[in-house]
Length: 145
Length: 358
Image 1 (cartoon, one colour):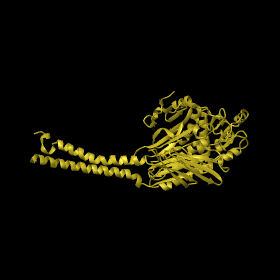
Image 2 (tube, each protein chain N blue to C red):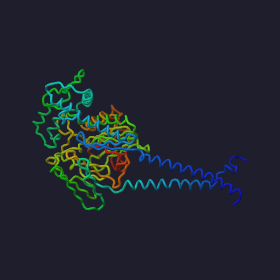
Image 3 (cartoon, rainbow over the protein chains, first blue to last red):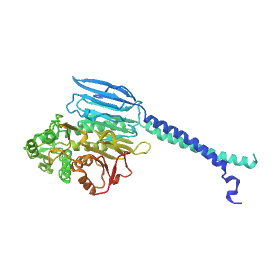
């Protein structure tokens, strides 16, 4: 009698079926969770405007939405932002350099438009708060440039 | 069912049980590993300094203390190196231009000395005495204008790193000619990145992400062991990225004309000046990103290589192959140094060339 013929060590078809079934039971939750996380990452976004660190405006970005405008009076100077289905942008600023206006539209979570003279930051965020340090948007952790 | 079949089934069930337990354990451990990112404390500060928005984000046991110390360090450096703060050491040097030597801290002296070394190495493509040119074109005040040839000729007499004198024995600095002015803006953020990195490493932490106005520094990896992912802005469409870099313990610093510019009579004038002409750099590049473990070097070279243009930049890289370079050409092509192959993933649809020397 060889080793393989011994009943206790024989590996049969049913063993294979059983292992595959158990492996699937183990893997399916991973796949489901992974997909769910992926879905979260492509979730809805919002445009958020902060001035001097204080949030002053928040607007959900939705497909087909009508443009939504918000104007802030910063010590008598006007700073206007617009959100629409393509993203958000600074539409007008009385700041001297206008870098914020020239930046154009932002649409991806993690992107920002900064107006240094007015200490204003327009940013795109996921609609649901994501406490993850390493996920600022589209699986990108930081943007250079 | 025969005795033998029942026996095999029992054996199978036994093996299966073991497999099942293993899978459950593996699943649990994986879940725990994934949740480590949630259980580990994290902290983030966002603040304005050095004329830009900055953020420092740290995960780890001493995250709060680390981000606070990092922010304080940036503020300290701003007080030391700002050109607009009349109390800074740089302002003191500028005020005494053409007349007296100014004694500065060893730290400021060392940074100026490093900047001058790179000015020589890049044959003047990087020059910290460029400040009067920035003023002339209105990039310092935001009141942009195109100067005439006479003004350009005049300002050229007030710049030139060879007129910045250093006295090593007493840490003294002097701008040789009246009207000269230095600006460490193109190196200060890179230096700040180096310093904040050093400071955070003194704390108990796991991962840190430092973003000083688009100058990105990453330390460590994600809680699950993955590399941090740094995207580089596409200068042709700021909503998009040139690509994404898997990063660990490195600086990713980008310079491009798209960051600040103005238009007059249908012509675009960018803020990166060529010290040789005192006019906006006529580069065949739209942006240059330098990936390196040294923030000062990355910051300086991102500007210098932009001014030098594609051919000179690649020639420079041939002698400094430890650098990572990502350059966007005006025709839309992306040039990537070959040492980033496998690390930098170019956005789908972009034309890319990996270069390996001249």
